[in-house]
Length: 177
Image (cartoon, rainbow, N blue to C red):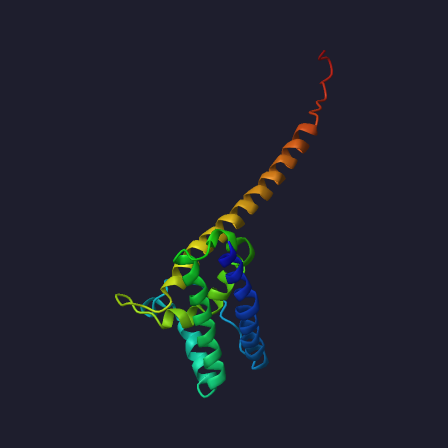
């Protein structure tokens, strides 16, 4: 349990501030974090939106060593955190409740860089990151879907209550008793 808390602490105190630094710098440069779809984590399978993002980032920051180092540090930090959970050093289910959704969002923002560094059929960088993202993103999606279902079920129950509260009234025709 202590390792889970330690990893969550690293996420909050190291990864989030680094992501914030990168984000502020990008927004200040009128450049945004990646908000496109996340697909397979392989360079060969990058969709055009992610490829375009990598191309635009490269043009913008090709000579900015600090930005490139920060993005690499971000990827490595996300991988390091995932390593502890995937290898069982820390309990991922304990940490998920506090950092799971935010971790998945961080991976999404840096997806093009992560996928760009990976090739099919090779020993790859960021394997632990990709595995943890798969587990946690499925869990986040399941929780979100359950919340939507619960809300719709509540709405349906409210509508059924209203329906049962409406009394059918009929007008009797003249001469009918």
